[in-house]
Length: 138
Image (cartoon, rainbow, N blue to C red):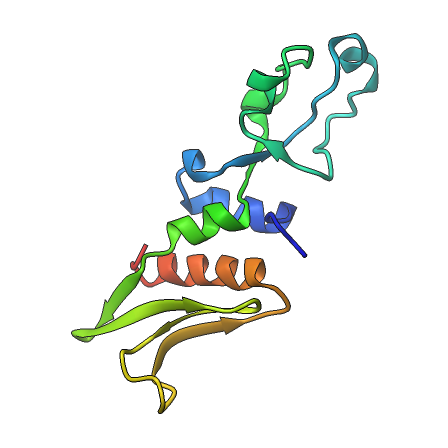
């Protein structure tokens, strides 16, 4: 199961979200003795927790400040409000393993303000955060 934003998603979110809202980073980290000869100037494929360097003092911080923010599923869901209002109607956050949506209080008729169903919940949450920002709901 996908548990953090990929490079493209992270780059897009970094354009409009506060960077402090990210709980992970893409970047290069290596033990001090290897950092000078192994670094190729790119991002690692796997992000690391934002507090990794505080917990692991044997690693170099050289690239940390310029690293690309990355958001976990928990961080994305934390950005989404519990309720939004559209035309004086309230819609409430709901999600499943593959979707994130805002539904009205009466749901038997399928009343939805917005819904994203993807292969996994992280991609659906990413799309919802982008939609919320675009529609001034974030």
